[in-house]
Each structure stands twice: as structure tokens, then as C-alpha cells.
Amino acid sequence: RKEVEQDPGPFNVPEGATVAFNCTYSNSASQSFFWYRQDCRKEPKLLMSVYSSGNEDGRFTAQLNRASQYISLLIRDSKLSDSATYLCVVKGYGNKLVFGAGTILRVKS
Amino acid sequence: DAGITQSPRYKITETGRQVTLMCHQTWSHSYMFWYRQDLGHGLRLIYYSAAADITDKGEVPDGYVVSRSKTENFPLTLESATRSQTSVYFCATTSGRLSSYNEQFFGPGTRLTVL
Image (cartoon, rainbow over all chains, first blue to last red; front, side, top):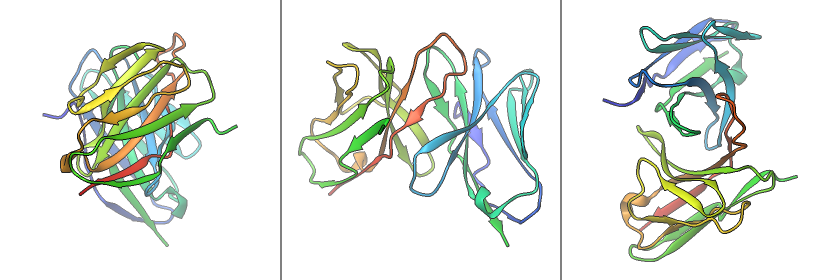
């Protein structure tokens, strides 16, 4: 079993739609959680950290459920520019990150 | 002002050859990492370094060697390249401050093809 699992998608949604991604992790000792965004043939970049109480950044909302060991990302009012791969990332010991394989989002006009 | 750079950006080599991928950062971050990214696997950690002269293995270290004589450089060497090492390689850094939410910053990647 992979340490971080995501639905690979692709999720094909129209502009303006709301879309949600889920991610599960297996290591209950994981300390912190992130969503990274990766555009085609580019490097990953931090989208947002995920805090225990849940957090929001504009159209993006991230939630963490430690009991069930899953993380979610909600994108409201999808834009064409949101098309990318979204990586669920878990941090364990030290500064090492464990990445999910990513969920592909395609927003269509 | 470059932050983190990788060279070369593209490399084609043959099986058995030695290849070195370079990573350079201008932030004086303590931690540096090497990942490989393959379809269906996401990013997997090869090696990392907490400081100059301190390195440690990640998830997939076999066939790779690293060194870190200076804080700003973290080269990755494939001692005898194999086709299974065809991948996109990303270098990353983080400051190592005492925070659970330190962001990792990635270089632009090196696309390596082993024939």
C-alpha cells in the first residue's frame, strides 16, 4: 500500500464548477500536510498547508481528518488556470515529504 | 536572484555511463533533497542533506551517489546509468527552521533519458 494515495483522475469540470479531491495517508505519526500544485512539465509549488482546524485561501479550502487519515482540497468557481496536477503531501520525520502520485484537474470552457 | 537552479535541464546518455546532475541554491537553506518523478509514482525521495557534509538515504537511493561539500551545491551522480533511471529529477530545498510547515522549493527539473 502506498503511504499517500490519491485518485489520479482526470477530473474534467466546466469553468465555475466546484471540485473536491481527497487523499488518504497511512502513517498515523505524520506531522503536517500540504497540497502542492504542478503544472505540465514544471516543478511542484506549494498551494497551501493543511491545518487541523481546516483552512481557506480564496477559492481553495483544505481540510484534515486525523482520525480517518484523510485530507481534502475543495476548489470553488474553477478557472481555466486551475488546470494542473494537485499533489497531496505528508510530512513525517524531519523535513522529509511523502508525495501522492497526484490528481489531474482539467477545467474546460 | 535565481533561487534554485538545476543543470543540465535535459540529458541523454547511454547505459553504463556516469552522469552527474547539478543543483545550486542561493538561499543558504540547510536542507536539500533529490527526487525522481515517474508516471504513476509521484515524487520519490532519493537522497537528502540536512547540512554540508551530512547526507542520508531516501526511499530509492540505489544506483545514486550524492555529496555536499558546500551548503549551496548538492550534486547527484548516477555511477552507472541504467534505463530504469530514465526519469525527471527534481532538486528541492527548505530552510530547516523549527516549523512543521516549512515550504520546500523545487528546481525546474532535469529530464534524463538513458538509452
